[in-house]
Image 1 (cartoon, helix red, strand yellow):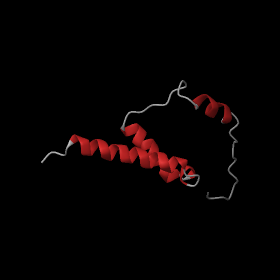
Image 2: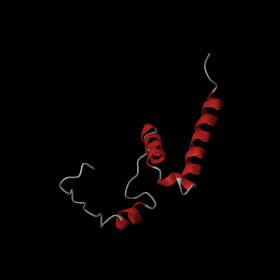
Image 3: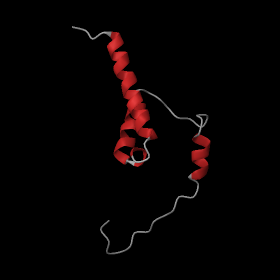
Amino acid sequence: MPIKEELIDRMAQLEVDSLLEGLENPELRKNPAFLDKVRKFLKDNKFQTTAETHGVAEIKQKTVDIPVFEVLEGTND
């Protein structure tokens, strides 16, 4: 028995709403596991971010100075 298209559309919208709600949550939007789910959703649905996407230029400007960490001898981390 095929699933009605309206139900699939509703489920997809609820998934998007849940992801957006999570991104608005200060704790969840810093959670790597949650962010991985967001990236997977975007990839699975073929959404791509480009330099023209609103906000991407500001992100690039903020990530210019990424620190370089040195590995100390005798550490296993």
